[in-house]
Length: 425
RNA sequence: GGAGAGGUGGCUGAGCGGUUGAAAGCGCACGACUCGAAAUCGUGUUUAGGUUAGCGCCUAACGAGGGUUCGAAUCCCUCCCUCUCCGCCA
Image (cartoon, rainbow, N blue to C red; front, side):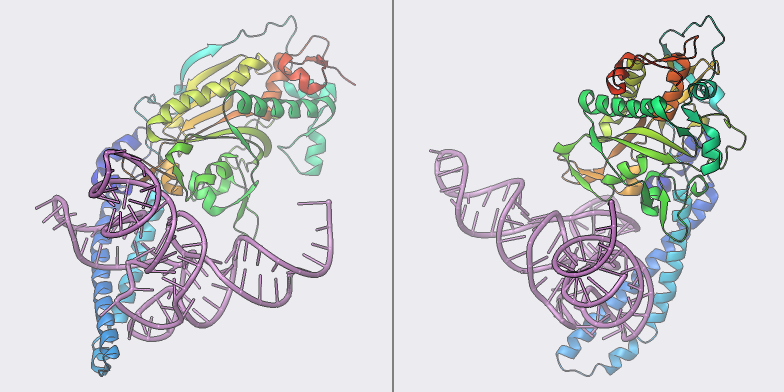
């Protein structure tokens, strides 16, 4: 959520900044509603003040044993007036709130201008692309050949966009998760957290998925509960309605959870394999930091995600999302894209964002600034470190051998009972 | 799931229809005392919104939402959460 005060005083500047990401802010409507709000609020508060004053005098008169009937007659119609005014004010505030909750974050100045992913800016590449003396297969073929990935079983159990993993591939999936969590907690200063996979609507509104993106979520019928689309939601909401002591900052959490996405807008996209599933696992990194530290935190966190790719020996590139590709709540996002030989291209495996105070304002996540002594909004930063399913895909495709086996990256071997490769059973 | 008890400021905890945004204590901040500190004393110490050049003034909030009333932290209803006992259960 953008600062409502700024929305009042710098509406045109904000509209300009939002136009960079292709969002048209209806400034006329906002101005009109704001004008009305102001009038109604002053009128309502005036009436409330009158009611309070008169009620107090009635109390005093009664205590003094005077006849209060004449006083009661004076306030007879005040109640109705007040009720009408309050209802009108509420209506206008709801309308404004709905608009404000639907406005995306403003892109940071360093974000390149652009319409879609074609305009994202590549910052750097890491790693040598593997050279094969055979036609590299994609992960579906590799996995099915090894007998460890089964999409037909998953379709039977549930439907499309699910997978059943078994044997060494199921173990590899678990090994990746453990390796990521161990690395982030031992080397990067994150505290591991285990959180609910089902959250309420307040949490989803806090991080920005609601009210605008309900169709992307799995909603538990007849309840206020939703399956989490990312651990970002439960983990970031740990600081909702909290005032953090300055000495406890920065907060750094790492969480492994499954993620559930309806993929409502993705018909026909990535229908093959594990790239785009309704259910996938992710290790998520979340930080809550002082405002002045958030851009440094984004660089640091992105580096933490990169270190996983580096330790796994997976070639990747880092891109800065352009204004048109930026997520709703983010002011700046880096995507890490891993090389997939089976597809012959780089694919997103991590997305690291700085939300500045956008989520914090929705959540009322604050810290006590010792300089002002006042509670002030935190900044939140998060990123995948990494998407486990896609990492598995990358390992299969980059480490495939001509005989159909798959090499196990050295850092994973301790988690794989020492196995150096995965072979068909 | 059944029965009962509760949810008040950073914390403990009063208030149970009227000048109560909320006693008291703790904590914290500032000041006095002191060579300094402790102890003691004094003053201050919620958040959000509106308005104002500013001092300030006004409004709202005692788990959430509705209701009764001139007036609600206090009464009524619904929901959420916590605790105790019973039942069930990985």
